[in-house]
Amino acid sequence: MQMPFKTEWRPSTQEEANIWIAELNRQGSANVRTSLASRWDSGPRSLLPIGGFWMLRGFAQDWLAANERRARRTRELTFWLTALTALLAMLSIGPDAWAWMSIWFRGR
Image (cartoon, rainbow, N blue to C red; front, side, top):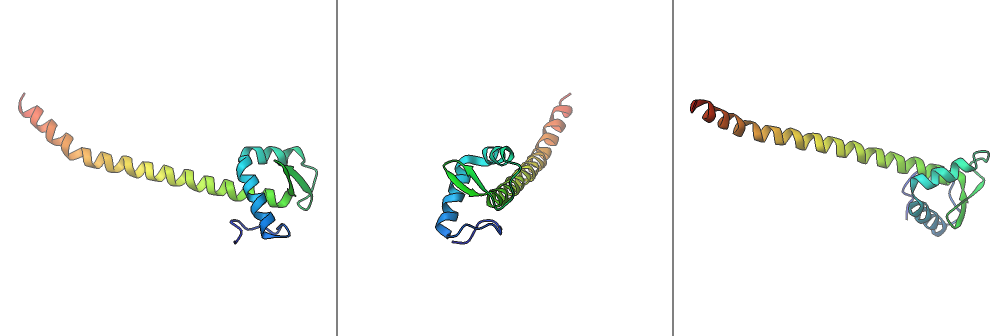
């Protein structure tokens, strides 16, 4: 299985990488960020305890960066889809509203 994000801080085996990724996903961005901030004095090659595993700090940093990029893209996509939906709703309501207003004003 290929890595879901780019990193130069790979573990020794793909199985270990899968375990680390599963643990990072289980912990979530906020907890991983807190773990990284609690040991700010270490370099990317140092081991960092996250959940029940020790993993390379650089690996966790790269996972966090990729996860935040993915979350930002999801938020942007949600915004644009919502804006498009609102625009289409306004365009579809417009002719009906115009017709109802003309009927209402004609009766007065």
